Image (cartoon, rainbow, N blue to C red; front, side, top):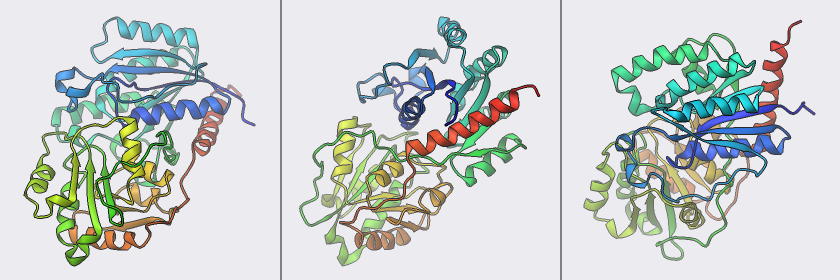
Length: 384
């Protein structure tokens, strides 16, 4: 048994709810169940609300996420700091973590992470950064933000004892993007099983295969390819229903326009908002096949929900999705940006409907991988 450690995890809270919020809470719970003494610092106000793509639902009661009762937490730090940063620093001093784990998904947290990492190092802690992607796609298109990430990102990583990624694909991206030369540890993304058990939500009639797209709608998510693929199914179309559930970001309304103009609009359900946990559970319960037509992806929360539920799925051969589905027999991989390939994949996945599949990593696996990282960085930190 690895020795329990004092671990503080820093990541997004529930006010600016996102997929990384669910990952952060799940990780803390897994580490706590593995016997570690866990604490948490949450990012409360991620950015000024007016700048956030999902500004209309910030602070809404969308989730029932809860931490184990023995996990002390500070909720939280604001983008503009004020007294919140001083209180977070005081929290770290009280908790005295041996390891500070930073969840990395956006440059909006970088200035805060740099300060917390410096404080942790001064208090004798080791800093670990877990990458969910090297840089947000929307941020990467902004020259100033990209340069800012280059500068502060490299400063932060010089303070770290280890970096974690979910795939070999991301390992290469992180090394190339930030010049990390030492080993970057691989911790596969675990399947999400946090959704409650709920009756199915589906407009598809009995006997029709319900295809579910779930997640935010952004230019690289490829939801428009799925709408186009429905047109390419030909006579087989009568076997299928398309359900899209997601919040539009970055003004990407092409899927909305294609749905409105589709001659098969009567076979499409479109829920264009960020849904609650109960609603999400119902939509997955009502799905026969999950379809993720991404143009690029490091990892995917909806993919992990689908695999944890044993559902057949169609995903594109991009980024970390290839590795994430390698041991999952219910996955059908297709070419990105290719509605014809996507339509063919849907037909192949239809043959899998009714089966339940296994092959997803568990949070216990994640905790064991983290233990190995903790043992390594703390052993290396001991004078010999």
